[in-house]
Amino acid sequence: MKYDLSNSSDLNAFNFKVKYLIDKQSKVSLTSVKMSRSIKHNAYLHVCITLFAIEFGYTLNEAKTLLKRDCSFMLYEKNNIKFLKQTSKMDSKELAEFIDWIRNYAGEQGLYIPTAEEYLDNKFNIDREIANNKTFCNIVETNE
Image (cartoon, rainbow, N blue to C red; front, side, top):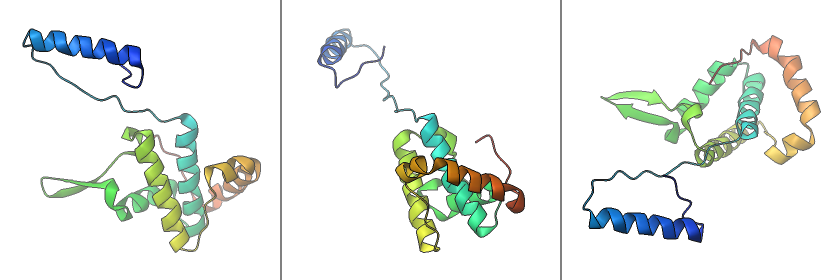
């Protein structure tokens, strides 16, 4: 059962269920539901990565890999081997942090990446610029 603890009715039902399970001395498993991210949020991430790729002459895969490698919170270690987190597994908060990091990192490299609002205001021109440059930079779309 899922409960929205910001809703008083759900909170009451949750507390009732917890009390019932405590009284029965049940074994339970508790998980928190992550906020999923929107398709628009995901599309904006790819716009940021694509603009970075075009500016510095990388494919989309190369740019995504490079950005993840340079971003400390996109790396994790297992058995002394470093791995890159998958953006497809990130919730909206994590994705927003990564997008902010990309924009700041690009700015340090001399590239201004528009905010999501600026992108939406100028979407037609930015998308046209991306389309015009994809063939020159050998940018290949990925499924991630």
